[in-house]
View 1: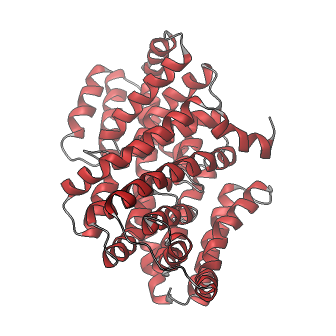
View 2: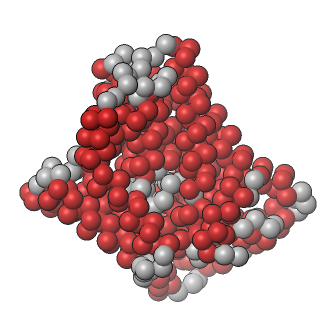
Length: 423
């Protein structure tokens, strides 16, 4: 197993696609141990043969329909109309819009790429500096995988066998807490740097902004009601949401043209293929780790820590470190089967364990050197990556504070799921 792990680490630095790396390392172990190669086919088939996993491409499709259909502009205008009059109003609008768009995209990259250009340009026009604009755009994008529906959360729940519905609703508390903490940071910068405020909108302006954004705002509400009333499963809700986004984009807002649909579907297929290839090869890699008893050995090491609070601190530090160097989906697929059982054995609820893992690894999307959202923001803003990284570092503080509260105050993640589902 040591040889395979060395090969895996070496291949990480070669620029080889991650799914190829996972597949080659796993096949090497299977070949060296004399296991049957057919196990590779079996594990790939097993990983892709999941009803819950079907939700992923439809959530991606929904986000793409919304983004292509110009819904992001209407959402930002609505958010800016509501909070634009307070200090740092556009920064707060940035956060609120990320929360709203999270209910449609479920990913940090889609948030930064879809909303980033609109938000940064709007903030530039009224006098916000690029450093602040890029920093809050990057940091608020982390809300995407926390506020439901969350694509990483679907993948995590499928991997560890947790309830997707419970984890979705469990993400609401941490998401709101994160938004509030980022809002306090925005207020501090706004007062210090004397950022401009919008004039107070008239009732007519408020109504027009709400009217234009109404059907976009209904998307997450439809998802919540459909899932939590038990009318449909998470997968069926994703299909309904994708269809709903297509209908309002084509027939109501009329910004989504029929000629755009093939490109949107192709983009969705490309993203889904990328995610699924990692899911399938990570399943093989997880099988190899299990056969080599790596999870059992790590479990013995971690359970040697008697203090639960110290144990959770070690888990957080480990996951934050991994998030700095590994893409979030891959880290979830490789590490969650190892860490999740240990965390639940230490008395952490399944919902809280999932949120701790997700929040840690999603903070990784805004931490160098891998931090993909930093580079997406740099690209859409036409600002150097180093500048974006430097500006975003202070905004990691509210994210870390949120992480500590989620880790050590179980009610933040457990109260709402218990209220809805009982137990």
